[in-house]
Amino acid sequence: MDIDQQDITGLILAGGRGSRMGGIDKGLQNFLGSPLALHAVIRLGGQVGQLMVNANRNLGAYEALEVPVWPDSTPDFAGPLAGMLTGLEHCETPWLVTVPCDAPLFPLDLVQRLAAAASAQNAEIAMACAPESTGEAPRPQPVFCLMRMELSESLAAFLQAGGRKIDQWTATRRTVLVDFEDGQAFRNANTLDELHRLTA
Image (cartoon, rainbow, N blue to C red):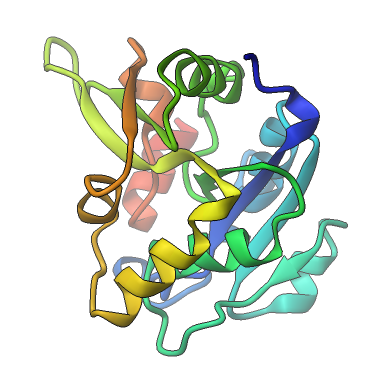
């Protein structure tokens, strides 16, 4: 059975420390004249029924994007999984899809393709795969992930047990990998240098 767009909530992950950018808030960095997080809001908004942002700092600036903003429900900037758990806890649709705030060029058919694969394979999670550079085999892109809303208990238990790696958790669930040919679409900006390269 196909998954309806209205049954999917989009979550933009902007809750990290930005340590490789010198501790600045990545989602608020300028990309082509607008904050990175705004690019994600616009790009993901057309692919889902509802949107929200996970952020742990500068909440007012994120609220100005006019979507609900939720900080991590776990302490200490526990990484993207903590953001995913927060999204699942606040999700009111059967499915949640996540994207990071620092990859402004992700595919415009991302959600459609993840949803089609999850539906066809009766999966609990669909994760994007793409080559990191030309000629390479596709690699999992774990922060680009569609998951069933009911997985919150499983994820909470994994985090409480000290788990931090997305792929270690998804390996315990029915997960399908979805190949995307254009690795450039998944490029992200971990450093200011990488952000400048993306802009160029």
